[in-house]
Image 1 (cartoon, rainbow, N blue to C red):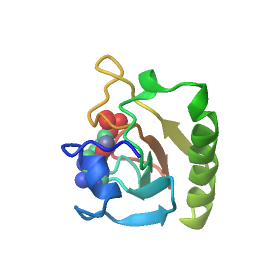
Image 2 (tube, helix red, strand yellow):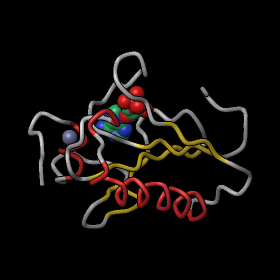
Image 3 (cartoon, rainbow, N blue to C red):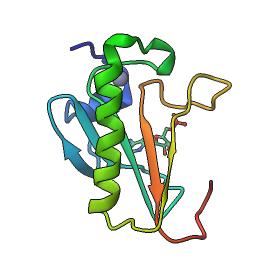
Length: 115
Ligand code: AMP
Ligand code: ZN
C-alpha cells in the first residue's frame, strides 16, 4: 500500500503518532479531528496515501463508497441524531491543509465553532 513517510495521516494510519481513533480496518482509519468545528468532528481516512480527490480514479469507487457509509455509521455510534455535514477539501483553492485524502463528518448541537 502506498505510504508517504512525511505525511501526518500516513503516520497516524501506521500508528506512529497518536490519534483519538473511532474506527480502524484494513483500508480505513477514522479519528477525532484535533481542532473540531462541531461537537462531533471525525475524519475518515484511507490508509493508502491518496493525495486528494484530484488523484481519485474509477479504481477508488468502492473505497469512496466505504468512506461515506462508514461516516454514517460513526455519526450514529457517536450519538449524532439531528443531522450532520460532510466536507472534502481538495487542493489549494479547495482549502485543503493536509495533503492526504480525508472526509470530514461533523455534527452535534449548534452553535458550532465553525462551519
Ligand atoms: P483539510 O483542511 O480538509 O485538509 O483538513 C485537515 C484537518 O485535519 C483539519 O480539520 C485539522 O484540524 C485536522 N488535523 C490536522 N492534524 C491532525 C491530527 N494530528 N489529528 C487529528 N486531526 C488533525
Ligand atoms: Zn499520507
